[in-house]
Length: 258
Ligand SMILES: C[S@@+](CC[C@H](N)C(=O)[O-])C[C@H]1O[C@@H](n2cnc3c(N)ncnc32)[C@H](O)[C@@H]1O
Image 1 (tube, helix red, strand yellow):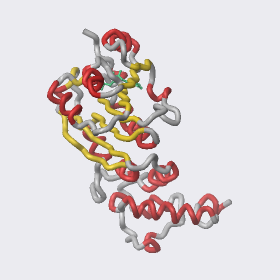
Image 2: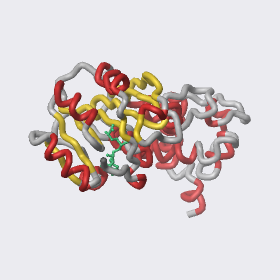
Image 3: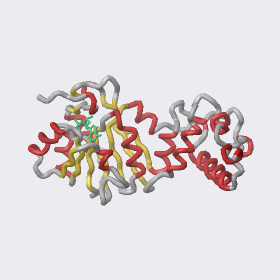
Image 4: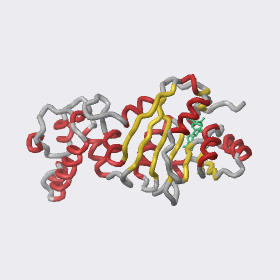
């Protein structure tokens, strides 16, 4: 039996009930399936019964096992992030995977930005799934849920307890589905949100004033409003208005002092 490597986030999903539930939750489409981190191949086997699969696995030892087990699998051995240029495939695809938790957020953001990614069905740490699916007003609502809502319908489907994995992770996991309706989110908007949520406990005014000449009342917002209380559409309006002004050199603090 192979020893799981912590550095690669290896927690193998062994519980047949949950493997089946993931397969049942697969969106109906004919798209290529991309699996990141097939591991020992338990999910891969089920995916191959339904669709064409392209898989990326960083662990060379696992790659050898997978090649023997699935001679016809299109398998790339190496770090998926190194393969990932503009797109992970030259055709429309659905990303279906039990993701390595240490890079799960990064991978989801890349896929939300990748114009060929259409559906993203992933098993991740529950805490991260909660952040992606949070609603305005929730304490954990922030840039992840806003960016996701710009490009996809986000559905948190079900939780999976640690005991379903070998070795068992320390935390609870969740399966989450992103059904994309837009190719990509705006990179500058993502940067703007970083500034708006830099210090989530402070007011929106305090956060945005670091970079912009921002007056909440001009936008019909209370001076005391905190970033997690502002909905995605309002954020996008703020972003567009402040961007427009900084083009004219009126808004951006650094351009004012130039
Ligand atoms: C949580 S395990 C999932 C394994 C398997 N799919 C399962 O459900 O049992 C994550 C997998 O991702 C692989 N992995 C980790 N980092 C990776 C990377 N940067 N690129 C590709 N695969 C990676 C690990 O080696 C491991 O096989």
